[in-house]
Image 1 (cartoon, helix red, strand yellow):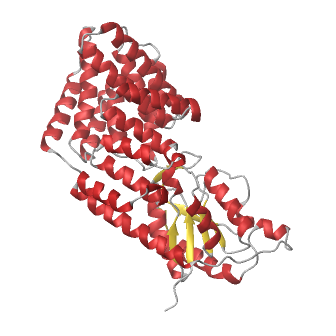
Image 2: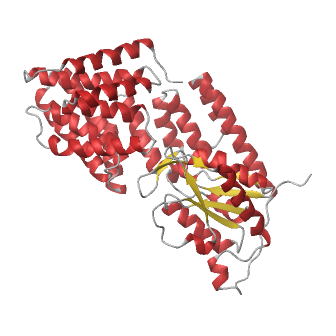
Image 3: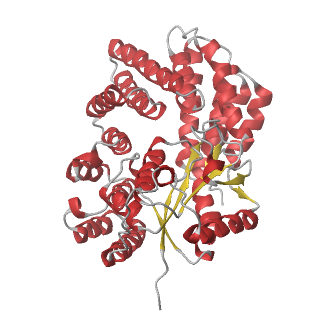
Length: 449
């Protein structure tokens, strides 16, 4: 039986925002739209792993850009890494490259229609709509691409450019088979615990010879079982260019903080910001590290150190929110910690409505989860808004997935209540009820199906 030609698919992983702030569930787009369309065209889909490594382009990616006969590139998020890989592809192959993007996305640097791009639609929840229709269009475009005209602008403008079909080397399918096998082993090992994951790592051998996507899967598998020290150690054994990526460095910072190596975590995250610039995610992690250090100093009775650390935590969270106004996580933490200062930071009154708007926009877009509703609840407590708070509490409780989530939210509400009690401020009874109900949900281990 003849093996199906390979189709390399370059697109984001998980939920990502396009330039308009709309969240798109790219895993759903991949599984429900792209994969069925590719297979209906008689092709075998191969998903790029670079989106999981902070966009770094590894050797295996260059090989697949060159060796896979077909390529589908999703331009929805206007990601620079995708553009770069698309440019490499256009320089390597004259045809069989198909572009896709979600309709109503922000304008990209060129007109995709000139390159016969396929627009698809997503719902308010960011999932593909009218799947059968757009699958059929994509399938038709892929079938036509093989015998169709040149779709590479490079070869269109320089038609005399010599091109040699590199073909598909037999080892490529062996690599893909190995990658799928290792992912299955890691998925099984995560259910068994850290020792099982470590055994899979032993079977991998030299990590320098393992594709980056598998190494990242291994790295995140240790995170899934809270083996923080193993995450830090693994990062030191990774190929240097992979270990230096933003995603890996952020996760190492998280692992260091969970291992109570807070000063190391702070230094790593500050170095990352210095090298890569402001980022809401990195500043959010830094703020969490400084918040933990503040609480440790407070509990130890080190009032002067605690005051300084609280100021630094507020500053980190505020810079994270300013780096991306759409990300409410650093924003709500900034205003909460401002409330805890003595006296409260007056800037919180200006920032609070902006954070409200950010989280409410995310909820309206249909991309909300537990943390969005719990953020809204925390904001209503800060604003003393009982009507919104009662509604937000109900929705927060409905979205609980694990017991530690409402426990964390209740802890934040407790910190606000205790700070206000120290100032002899009146505590509305509804905020105390919210705290109690969250703790009850944590005790029950309530989980949303």
